[in-house]
Structures are given as structure tokens and as C-alpha cells.
Image (cartoon, rainbow, N blue to C red; front, side, top):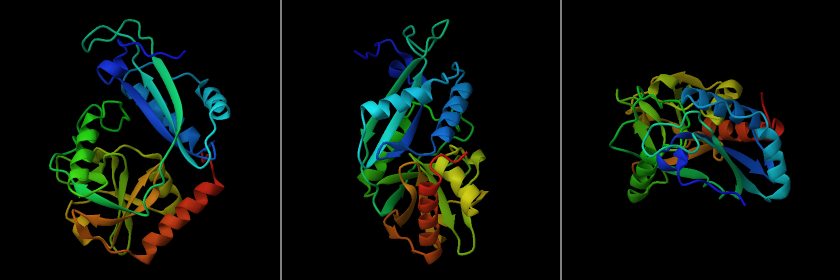
Length: 260
């Protein structure tokens, strides 16, 4: 019977990294890119590298626990059992947890709320998909309390950073731009594909651009490219170019299930 020790540092201090991978009818999307990012996150957190056998374990799980329709694989690679407090065990014996569950279909358009506390682009966890997620939990809770379904952070310099579980793309009427990684942004897999496939540019975007944008989109593994309807209760325009971008992205992902 699978068990997680109460002394596991992923549970006690959030010492771990993770990935969320979309499945459709138990077929995983962008799996290679997610496994590569898991390895980068582990390196950034100074954890041992995840084993190459993860891919085979995922295949076995999908056969054993198939899901029809939209699902999500959750991979967690933690620091494993350790002493009370922040000090890790020596040597580290990581814990690997893999699950496959149903996922709700994202809304056609999202309502986002800006939060009053920043994403620290100088944090050692910046760019790491860490299980230390309390900041995102608080941000999403704040957004829900203010009528939104996603939270948007500024960084400490007042630039747009990212959502609690998504990246963001701004359409200014000419270009599609997403915040650069030095704004405290996680290098999302959907974000990366939007840059490669759709010509989305990277740059520094002031928070004021949220009110002047011709359209706004969120990106994540489960959302693909999701159009935004409101920012802080104010309606966002819906440009035909943004609709076309979202449709183009989803169509191509269905054609290239595991883009390298």
C-alpha cells in the first residue's frame, strides 16, 4: 500500500518540486518538456535528479488508472524523509509520487484579479516549480474573494509577472508579449510553445498594460491559451487575433502531442 512518511520534507517544509501534465483520454501532452522541467527544478532546489524510469511509471499508471476526457498527471519529487526543521537528511532519499485524476474543463474566458503583494523575482525559488506553494494559495484565495478565478502578480519592480498557476500574454494591438523570465516567471510549457509556435515575444510589461491591452490570455498546461474577460472587474476587449491565436495553439498541440 503506498504511504507517505510524516517526516517527508515535501510534507513538513514544502521541500520538493512538481509537474502537472494534461491528459486527454489518458494521452499525456508535452510529457518530455514537463520531465525536462522537473529535472531543472530539482537541480535548482539541489535535489538529486529524478530517475529516468519516471516515464515508464507514468505509462503503467495510465494503463492501470485510465481517465476518459480531460485529466491531469501530478508528479511530485520531494526531499524525502528528514529531521524536524529545515535541515535535510544526509544522504537525501527523495520521494516520488505520481497520480492521475480527472480535471475540470477550463472556462472559455477567465476573470483575473491583481493581488496586493508582489512576486519576488530575486527569490531563490524564482523559476522553480516548487511545492512551496502557499504564496499562490493565498493569491488565488484573494482572487476568489474579489470575484476572480485567477490571480496576477506584479514583480517587485512593478512589472507584470505571472498568475498563481499560469503565465500571461498581453496583446497590444500589434504584438503578443509575455513577461520575460527575469520578472520572476516560471518557464511554463504552454508559454514556451506559444513563443516557439505562435511568435509570442518576451519583454518587460508594466502593470498598466492590463488596462490598455486589446486582449489578454493566460497559458498553462490545462488551460492551453485561455482568453481573459475581466481584470479587477473591468471588461477586457476580445480581439479576433487573440481568438485565432488560442485556436491555432490548441489545434497544433493536438497534432504534436509531445513536441520536443
